Amino acid sequence: MSFKLETTIEYSMDRPWCSTALQGTNIVALGYDEGTVVLKLGSDFPVADFSNAKIIAAKNSQIYTYNLKLLQVEALTEEEKVPVTFKELGAADMYIQGLRFNSNGQLFAAYGEIDYSIYNTRAFKSLGYGAGTDLVWGKQDIFAVRIDSSIKIVKGGKDVGAFKVGAAFDTLFGGEFLAVKSEDSIIFFDWETQTVVRRIEVAPKAVAWKEDGTKVALIDEESTYILGCNREAIKSYLASPEAYTDEGVEEAFEVVQEVPEMVFAQVSA
Image (cartoon, rainbow, N blue to C red; front, side):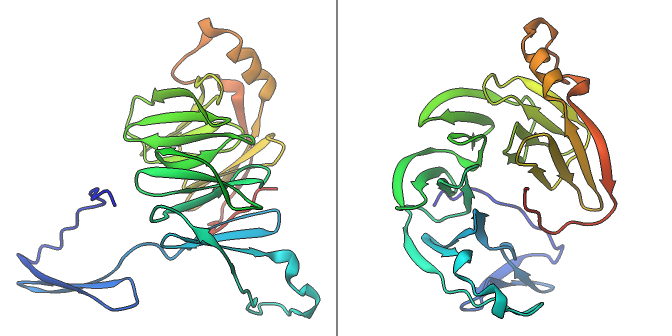
C-alpha cells in the first residue's frame, strides 16, 4: 500500500462528517452537513487479460487462470452465459491492479501501485520484479513501466533505457511501438532508442495493434481510427538522428479507415 492520492472530489455540501461502506461491495456512502452521497468505487472491468485461449484474472493479490479450450463450444447457444471455473495459480506479493500477457503469451506481468512481477505462464514461476507500475509489453521480453513522471524500459530482465516525456501523461500502451497518452495527444516511441516516432493530436482511450504490426487502432469515445504503419519510413527516420524532431516523422502513420462507433472492448488480430 502506497497511500498515494488517487483523486479529490468536491460536492459543495459543506463539511463531510462520516463515511461507511456496504459490506462485500465497492459502494461507499459519505455524510455531509447538507446531504448524503453514495459512490461506487473502482472499475466495472475485471483485472484480467487474455492470450492464446488462456485467461488470467486477479482478485486482491490472488491470481487465477482458465483455458478456453476446455469449453464445450458445441453445447453453447447464442448469448448463453459461459460456465467457467477458474483454477487458482497462486498469490503475488502485492495488491494487483493490472495483469498483462506479453506478445507470445509465454509470460505475464502483474503490477500494483508501486511495483511489478513477471511470471512464466505455464509454471507460475517468478522471473523477476522491480519498481514501477502501468506495465506494457513490446515484442516478447521487452516492456515499459511508469515510475512517477519517468518511463523505464526493461529487456531480458535488464534495464536498457529511461526517459521523461516532457509533458504530463496518464496512460501507457504497448505494441509495435511504445505509446504514451497525455491529455490531448498520443506519442509513439521506438522501443530500442526511445526516439519519438510520431506525435498525433488525439487522446484515445485504448490502442490495439494488428499482430504483424502493419496497422494500429486508436479507439476514442465516439470513433475508432485505423492507421497504417509505414515501417520503411520509420526505419529510414530512425537511421538519421539529425532529422529527429519532437513531432517525429509525418509519414509514420496514415488513416486508412474511420469507424464512427463506440468500441467497448477489442482483441488484436
